[in-house]
Every structure is written in structure tokens, then in C-alpha cells.
Length: 341
Ligand SMILES: [Zn+2]
Ligand SMILES: [Zn+2]
Image (cartoon, rainbow, N blue to C red):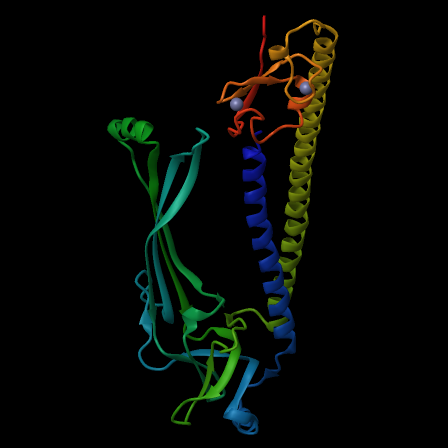
């Protein structure tokens, strides 16, 4: 019985389904958390508010301010006029690859990715909140400063090699992104006082709720999460339905298989029955004592017991004797029809 294809399909489907469910709830919980997070203006009152809270911390708040470097900003590699506080440099290779199905697919892989960070704060009218560990943010919006694709010009050898190797380079993409100085961003996270007590800091929440540094307003962020949640819900329904269908097919196949086995056993039993009847009818009436079944003493001997080799039972009695040979007490391993001429 072969359930291999169905099992593989069901396995892949389950993995996708579970991932969708997880993302759905992740978005749902994030939405609830953000909607429950107070939006606070960065001003002198903020310091007062935080001091009234236990542990001098607010576990989840939203603030909005302008990005201000604490020190010398990072200068863009591709545009000297651009200054920022977080820089991402990424080199990607684009290839055409022959998949296991034999088709050629576009795919890409990151060859190198570097982040440079400079301490920075969000500022409003001279009041600052330092941002801690910006790379830990679930969303960190940055501007694309430069995005260049250098196509590879293949030689004849490259074509031949690519055909046999099943992979051909299309080109190299170099991207630079930056969180620019002066950008207005919304930060959602845990608000605390720095260790020395001089500075307010926004950091990734210690309770595991998502940390956001985005140029969106809170309402846009909620809308984005809502859309994402809705998409995951549809995907959950789709892959859930596929799972049910495939599961149904497996059950149907199993039941069919079982019904077939039962039917086969039934036919075998009937054949056995009719054979026994036939043998009963053709039994000779006149036979000597040594050709008589040792149990019932009426029917002729018809069955040989193995491995001892005794032919001492009729078919009817042999059905009731499973363990030991009635003559020599040897364990019965096998029985077979014997023809005594
Ligand atoms: Zn008998
Ligand atoms: Zn025996």
C-alpha cells in the first residue's frame, strides 16, 4: 500500500498551515498590544510619568520623534550628502537555477550583509529618548539610498558550463539602505531610564512583545498588521482545506484497502470451506486402523504435522489442534494436506 505521495503532501501542507496560524496569531497579538499601548509625546512630562511607575519603566508605549545621532553620523557610501544612524549594505547574487522538476527558475542569495549602527535618539523640541538595539526591531524602516544591478555578461564557456552545472549567474545586486538623520519615526517598545538615570531609553520589550521603529503612524502600522492578519487567515483556511481533503483521501484509500483485505479473506475462507466439503464427500469408507484419525477414530488421516512428520489427524480434528502433535508431543510449526494412497 502506498501512501507516500499523500503523506508528503499532507506533511508540507501541515508545515505551511502551522506557519500561517502562527503568523496570524503573531499579527493579532501585536495589534492588540499596539492598540493597548499609550501614545506619549516626547516632552518634560514624559520624565514625570515614568517616575510615577513601578521600576521606573513603561512596559509598552508608542513615541514619535526625529532621528538624531548621538555622536558622528554614518556617511552613505553611495551618496556623500546622506547621513544616517543605521546603515545596511547588502550584496546579492541573482542566478537562474535548474530545479528538481527540470525547469529553470530565478533565485537569489545574499552573499554579504553588513549593518553599521551609530547610537541615536528620537528628539522632539530638545527632549530626547535614546533608542537601544535598533536591529532587534521587528520592523525597522530604512530608506533605499542606492540599489544597483550589474548584469553578468556570460561567455560561451559560461553558457556551456551553466547548462551542465544547472546554475547560471544573472548578475550582482548591491543595495544600500539607511535610517537617515532627521527622519520622523514612531518607536514602539519599552521605555526605561538609563542606568545612570540621565537619559530616557526605548528598548526591545523584555516580555517578548514586538519592537517597532517605523516611519508609519501608529494607525497605519495597525492597518498594515490588520491586512497581514487577514491574508494569513485566508492562507490558513486554504491550507486547512487542502489538509482536510488530503486527509480524507488517505482515509478513503485506507478504508478501501481494508475492505479489499476483508473480501479476500472471505473468499479464501469460502474456498477452504468448499475444499473441505469436497474432501469429506470423497472420503473412502474402507481403510485400515493405521489410516484412521487418532482423535475421532472415524475419518481417514488427511493432515501431516511438521516438523515431526506424523500423519495422524483428519482435517476436521486438525482444526482444533494447534500446539502439539497428539502422537509425539512435538510443537506443531506447520500443517499440510497429506495424500495417503
Ligand atoms: Zn478426526
Ligand atoms: Zn508427531
